Length: 113
Image (cartoon, rainbow, N blue to C red; front, side, top):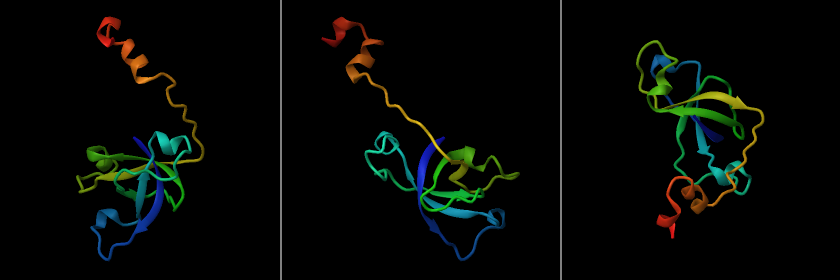
């Protein structure tokens, strides 16, 4: 699952019947910079996410991509991403150790020098 901010909506003129009752959202994926509040919007590509939960612009959501996105449907459908949760609040604490510190747990010290 990935965390994202809804930054817009998409409207289609014609859709497959499996998608009736839902909306399409443009989502800005949230990485460490966005989760800690240092940046408002991500710089990664913006997926279009199918939504039946009622998310709107500015909402934080959890979404899944790939084959998992089609799991809620009884038959296989062409879907890349789906909203699975609306986030009311969340807490994120990035790891405090440096990359070298993280590597020292895995690689012997004599190889890091």
